[in-house]
Every structure is written in structure tokens, then in C-alpha cells.
Image (tube, rainbow, N blue to C red; front, side, top):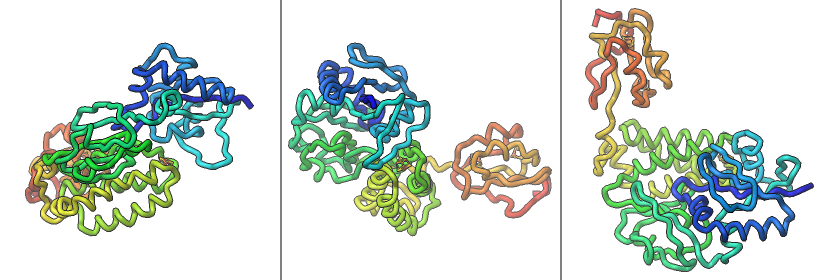
Length: 368
Ligand code: SF4
Ligand code: SF4
Ligand code: SF4
């Protein structure tokens, strides 16, 4: 069987956009590394790039994809995407992924660059707020020498698969070749760690390819529970639930993404136990990030005409009611998306941080 080498530029962590950076800025070095590998294995080459990206001087066919996934460093997942399917990995020692009659292997621009220039240096994406700076650093160098981490509230190493440590600990860590040091995200004192976890879990849910139930359901549950911590709906027992489910997922999820994506949340819960407790027990956020936004949606019982238009607009099936009766939003199900507001021509779906008195049982319109 012939061989196919795919240079995957679509498997980066969202906070470590290294592949395209290295490919664009060090094209000749990447091409030389790819050339070395493809000659050794007598392979044809495809560069798999995100939609809209182009780089000249590459030594192979360019294929674009709209799929960006942490599983796209897996040959089977890459073969699936080349065939027009969703990225889904296959991890089995003796499994050969095949595309177009050729055995697929995958390399990243980072690895190709290393094959040319050696692995004594490493590219690191340093994220702070909305900004990302990519630096080339030496393996073995302490993080504190090139990133302002000392004094930070927390530092996340490794992005979606990563772990939180304190700023002081981060400063002492020495760079190694692993993915852990590809993405360093710095959080300062003004940032809420519960909200940070909401953002991470939303992204993890988006990135889960859906192949295995543990990761698909786990990311969905984590996203929901952590969001509830920012709106006053979570319970202290949810923290234990997260820990228990995390252990199951880290053992049973199919690929390294699923096995590791729980660590950011559990390490934040450990490092910032007080902050999580404050959100759940006191329903407050000292950074002013969370509860300020917790506007609750309700239907004004004096104005609802019971037309039912809002029911179909709600993606969470959170609105109850029947023709001619005052409709009610189930606060346990409502995700505060606001979609029902524009569906109500009467303008009777409103928001408030504290709910007014509302009907608890079926009430005819005009009888409230
Ligand atoms: S662990 Fe998640 S990303 Fe990996 S195969 Fe399962 S569902 Fe897909
Ligand atoms: S805000 Fe969204 S989730 Fe809540 S009731 Fe309206 S449509 Fe449903
Ligand atoms: S669309 Fe408005 S008026 Fe009609 S049932 Fe819903 S809330 Fe009531």
C-alpha cells in the first residue's frame, strides 16, 4: 500500500494557535522536515489547512477543512475529515488508517520544524485576556524568565487539556517538550475562576467529537453545572459530583482529549475552593463577573394572552402552558438565551434579577 503523510494544521488547542504560525513564519524549516519524513516513508504529502488560510512554497497538495479538532492529530480522524466526515479518532496499535488507498500518517508543523532544527527550542503561546503572543523559548528555561506569571492569580498550562497552578508555582516550572507548555494562559486578580471554567467547559463541549458517551455527556454536564454556579442554581454536592465524574472520564474516555479535559476544572476547584464555595453558598462573585449577569426571564402574568408562540421558540423546552392560559418559564430549565423574547408579540417576556410573584398553577389569562 502507498503512504500518505498529512501535515495537520487544524489540531491546535484553541489557546495555542501554533501550527499556522510556525508554517507561515518558518515555512522552509517545516517543508525540510516534512520532506525528510516523506522521503523516509516514501509518502505523498497533503497539508491540511483551516478554511481561508494559504501558504506558498509547500511541498504537497493543500486541502482546506472547516473542522478544527484536538483529534486531528490522529490518522483515522484525519482520514475521516479528508473523506468529508466528522473528525473521530481511532486508537488501536495495529490499526492503519486509509485514505484514497493510502496508509495515513500525521505530522504537525511543530514536529516537522523540530525534525529540521532539533527539539532544544519550543514555541509557546502566551495568552492574557484577548491577547496571544507566541514566543520561541529554550527547553529547560523557567517560565518566569519569559512570561509575567509571578503575581498572577492563576496560570493554566496546556489549554483545554491543561491544569491550573498558582502564579508563583508557574514561574518556577521549567519548559519541556510536551504539549503542556504549548499554551500558557495567565489570569490576574480581577478574573473570576468560576467564570474562567465556564468558558473552558463551553469550549470543551464544542470540541468533544461525540464518539464516546463519557466525553460527550461529561462535557455537557460540566458545562451545565459550572454555568449553574454562576447563576445561583448549583449545590455544594455538585463539586463532589464533578470530582467523581472526572475520575470516570479520565479513565474511560476514548482519546487523550477526553481523558484530560476534566483537569482544568478539577484543578481550579482545588486551587480556588473558596471562590467556588462563595459562588454556590453565598451566591456571590467577588470579581463582580457572574451574578451581575444573572438576569432571569419570566412571563408577565398580567399581560400574557396564552397564544403559545413562545413555546416553539424555546430550545430548552422551558416554557409550559396551553391555549388561553398564562404561560410559565421553568427556571430550572431556562438557560437565559433570550430567544423567547422576540417570539412574543405582546412583549410580555421580561427579565429581572429577582423574580416577581408568578402563578404556581395553571391560571386562565385575565384571572391573575
Ligand atoms: S474522548 Fe471526546 S474527543 Fe475523544 S473520541 Fe471520545 S468524544 Fe471524541
Ligand atoms: S430565555 Fe431561552 S431558555 Fe429561557 S425560556 Fe426563553 S427561550 Fe427558553
Ligand atoms: S408568546 Fe407571549 S403572550 Fe403568547 S403565550 Fe408566550 S408569553 Fe404569553
